[in-house]
Image (tube, rainbow, N blue to C red; front, side, top):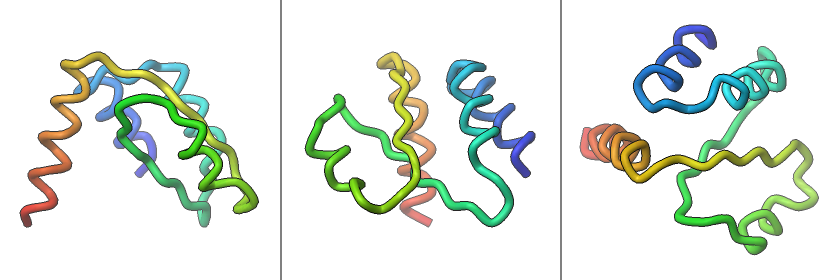
Length: 79
């Protein structure tokens, strides 16, 4: 559910309320989303998505937030 997911991202990872809200408004039932953790913004990355439709949103995270997210992703990768 979107509300539970949004709360998790805000509380556990400190992702900004505005970013979570904006994504929540854009993603509707039946839509898809790709979330990517990158070291820095690259025009090459955005070019990969050109012509596919949709919208590219970005936010920055602190080193502490990055480590928390990586730990969760790595935990799920090994299952």
